[in-house]
Amino acid sequence: MVSPGILLVDKPGGLTSHDVVARTRRALGTRKVGHAGTLDPMATGLLVIGVEGATRLLTYIVGADKTYTATIRLGVRTTTDDAEGETVERAGSGVVDAVTDDGIAAGIAALTGAISQVPSSVSAIKVDGRRAYDRVRAGEEVELAARQVIVTRFDVLDTARADGVIDVDVVVDCSSGTYIRALARDLGAALGVGGHLTALRRTRVGGFDIADSVGIDELAAATLLTPAEAAERTMPVLQVTAGEAKDLRHGKRLHGGAGRLAAAEVAVVDPEGLLVGVVEARGKDIKSAMNMPEVQR
Image (cartoon, rainbow, N blue to C red):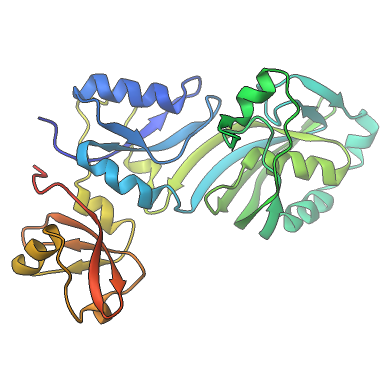
């Protein structure tokens, strides 16, 4: 039997997130596998995989902030806002040459902080129960509503100019739900030359880093983070007694304990180091919001 845990995978380009889940199922011999946040097939980098009972933690990981490195190509606009789409407009070389480094910096500054962003029409967002990209592929016109996202860092790492385009390497720290290819599109639009994403790599999801990940061919031999270790990287932790752990596992409240909670959602760990679950305040009491299976080894 596979022990529950969190597996950090470095997804290669060309595979969907579901492909990685399928390979993990085969490698570990279990069907109970899920992931915390999709990466496009073109993208590479960190995919957080939950195995067995640890899939219950994915709900709390999926909303974590993230870090990406990316390359934005200015001067070309595509149907998908990335390199997988068809070119729909190419700016004249003179117009592209007129874009200065200061202009790029100003455009990036305008896309930093709390911003309103319209996701790409080929995103995985559901519209009336169907993925937006499925509707686009079926020939439908899709217009998605703008959403508020937060970009805390949007820094230029390098700039290269050649063949009538400008390739801008960037690093982005952002809230969950931010579309990096939409940043590329909007930067190009603001500069009047169009833009799209040619490379994207996710290097961090909350407290999980790409440095701790394994390759797609290393799944069977990988060491999983225990549910307790994963929870500690995700939220504050409350240590409880064996008696309190038993009560929480049986659905009982810890009366008068709400003052012990450091946040709205707190992981609870028992004296043996096992994750009991996630709790929240209910009035003055502590109440379970999610319980882990008792067998975690």
